[in-house]
Image: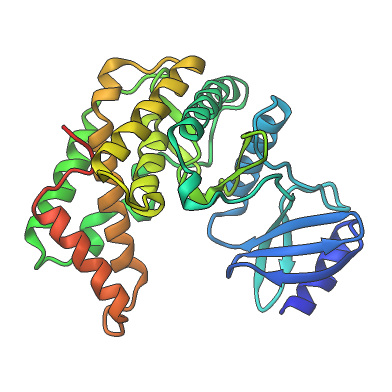
Length: 312
């Protein structure tokens, strides 16, 4: 497939690609004489959704935000239809500067800069939506990944009650242009690159959606606590320090009301239920590995006992 994709990309783009390597099932590292690029090849979202997504991210780039711009094809398209074993959609991106930080380097100073970046992102999202009304990117609750009660087994009554309560409570929150709009949607630490000057680049906007802006902050704090903490103190204190840092940074660039700050634990709970539901949605429950069983049981314990990742 890599050789076939290399041939197709060289036909579609003026990049003189030499090699294509799979990074994930959907993302490919492309080496060219001009440098390194990344090609996303997927049908995860429709053509119209992907065009709207790259229009959004290219707008953010033009406004000076740390995101990766797309490469236009020889046909002048940002999203190209290509034929592999079936028709797929391809977007090619410039390589982003920076690295994935080692776990020990995720500290409050970096999270404060992330907060500033998110504040700018959401402020620019409001500007984008004023210029380009969003027609194809969904509101969060319309996406299949949030159909928790469809995927969490009926036997898991306690977790289903938690899931239903979280969805119901968030569904009742008042929405306004100041707290709700386009956002990244999957701001785990793997989707952040940091250079030597601590400048951040956000990558992989494939899950961008219309949501409460606080969700981007919740996803980042959740990711830090789940994947970057390496001991040496209290994980609750670590999470609180990262939370304070990201909120302080955010408020330097954009308004975050006290009412929405108070809802942060609720949105972290949403992220927890989201991740647990995805395990049922995508993992073959008849062929779970030992690690998958262990991970699911850790989630079950936490959700059934209503453990909070943050101090209340």
